[in-house]
Length: 242
Image (tube, rainbow, N blue to C red; front, side, top):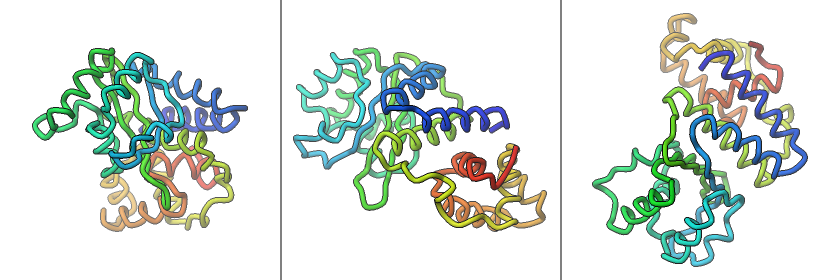
């Protein structure tokens, strides 16, 4: 994570917040995804697999229409391995990271048929909202280019967009959570400079366990899903500067 990437993410989130409609917010998001070779994305809740009305949970359908028709007509939803993993895990993942040996025959069929429609690989960002069911932002293409360092940035953007589109992001960051302590601001300031947990431990003369404990507290206070998200939220609250 560099200052430039954090500032760009900050600007993008601010642009999404200022969007006059969900459609405009989705256009901005789509432009970012295209930088990574992603051109089709879906935002949806994840009902239980046997729910025949699962499509009612869709917030945005950006899949190729032909693939959506096939997916629905073949009854793929109960067997979709991406949906299954997203229900159980909060960690983002790339489609090719699914354990091939662990897929059922129907699960393999879902992924093989997606590839036939130009969706050979993709990314899933699971969304787990308290007191609500699981959801996911997923995007795909025939060839994607997502470097490992970009995953926290994409995850942050996906979660923020989901909250915007679903109506869960109406409360401003300035109204959310308790203020950070001086130590928490200092630690997050170093994170914003691209320092790792180990780096911060050495700089501040504290253990990595203590750094991780501070990071958990920071995420809880800011309602952030990772350090990058926390940095962006702290910037928006003017608690740190870069």
